Image 1 (cartoon, rainbow, N blue to C red):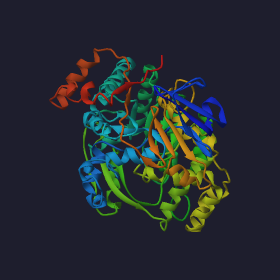
Image 2: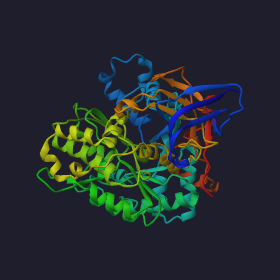
Image 3: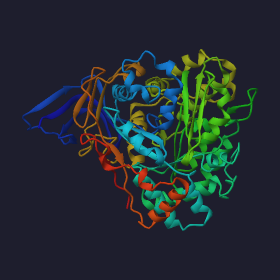
Image 4: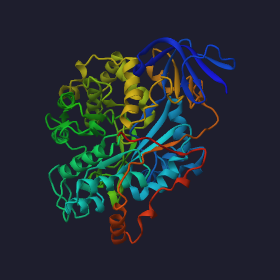
Length: 543
């Protein structure tokens, strides 16, 4: 087989402490030690370029029931697409374009973070249609009747862990996510506000109880990715206190807070809303067990997609344009509310500023992750512009100067001079996400790693640099050249297979028969769902 040598580039690989000009060798789809004696070598000239591992997005909504609902709700936004038959799902891009656009930016793995087990078969069928990149998903748990019933009935910790393992295994997920745990179940009982210690009618358990049991179960199972938590009071002024209390409630267990910017709101100031970024950054510094992705707001039209049906129901009247979709369902249901983040809106500008504050105030780039909560804060295609704002203080100053000045009186953004380095970008978008997900053969360029390599022109304009990779190799095959995608290749879907006591299946069968009138295997994702060229790949649990 041909050996590929990417030569003469500035290799930025923090996990292997490389930050200098050098070569990267690929053979048989994997990174290998230099092969100076190899005869059949394809050499890629990376002179004047930056070479990194393929990037990883740990939180992006690209498939599933809510994404499909968004496309059906907003057909006018996609009237000019070239492949209309691909547009029955996905938001704001069709499935093919989703993979192509990620690849053009140098990404090789994306994670859909909110898949209800009852929707898992359809969602995996959609994920497989995304080319160029590998995919993974997180199984939603925390509002389903089975878990809440077990908690109400004081099931043992071992039984709860078995149920969590069963849910992850049968939905072929890479971890578990809780979305406003208990709050969405409470909505079904006509509850409109749900805080950390409120209890779900009929079940008598709180969000704090649910989160605690899930964190304990995932740790027991050895699931690499900690509980991916969308906590209570999303988007409400004063919710920084909820976030701080949630961080404390982890009690040392690993926990990942999703889209932290949407929990960074105080109540001070003329707007009735202020930045809580400083308190959140200080809390993360004190709690090394907690990581977070930001969910940065970027200006422009978008659509909010969330399985937090309670929040989406409460926000439905703020939709722009004036239409929305909120549906009930087991393990959350969901809601679609279109929005437009405007540079003239002081609230939207404050949200934009809070996200940037979090990036700049959290010192450790291995514990804060690059996301816009696509498409909730903005599309993933805004990542290059966001990276430029993080790497270039003058670019931030120029952006701030064009926005309402008085907004920044309640933030620290103007005083923050920090500029991310290439190494910090590589940590935040490569090494740290791989470590968080337990995918140890990704996110770096050491021997044995998957041959996912991004090559960028080293441009002063960082947005242009990260928007268009000069080369991208996936499993050792070139899939992008000079910013253009080559022939489509289809990657793998990563999943876990944690062990569990098979006795849990009889309990689940009874519960499903009562609630659904259908056996649990109705919703289990079969191995044969994916084509042979796009298989499931099991990531090992920790022992």
